[in-house]
Structure formats: C-alpha cells, structure tokens
Length: 92
Image 1 (spheres, rainbow, N blue to C red):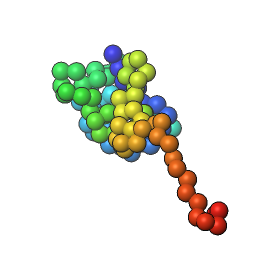
Image 2: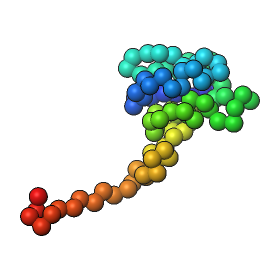
Image 3: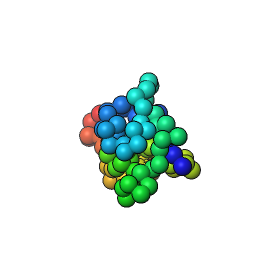
C-alpha cells in the first residue's frame, strides 16, 4: 500500500514536512513517494497528510490509480463543467 505523486505536481513543498514516514522525496520534474516508506498515514492520521495539504487536484493517487483530490474536490468546479462564452453585440 503506497500513494503516488504524478505529473501535475508543482513541487510546492507543502507535503514534504507533513509526511510522518519521510516518504516524500524531492525530485525532478516532480516530487515522488518512496513506496517502501509510505503507509498512507494509516494508524497515524485519519487521511493521508500529503493529500490533505496538496493544493493541486489529481496529482496524488492511491494504489488503484484513483486521485485522492479528484477534479473539482478543491475548487468545487467539476471536470465536466461546461464553460459559457459570452459575446458582446459586436460579436467580439
């Protein structure tokens, strides 16, 4: 059982000091999680601390490849939200 940080991580450093197992590794192009150290914070916290603090949706995945912060979970804007485009009377 281990979480994974994927492309989209902005290396903001928010998660690094929160990991109780020091499983988060500074890397390029984005941080990584050492699977042999990650316990998903089971028995230490109610939720994985990296996911609880992460400001980016969809970059921390569980072992099934599911995002812990799926699109819309932080912003309230779902991935399937439609965007309306308004034009003024001149058509610009």
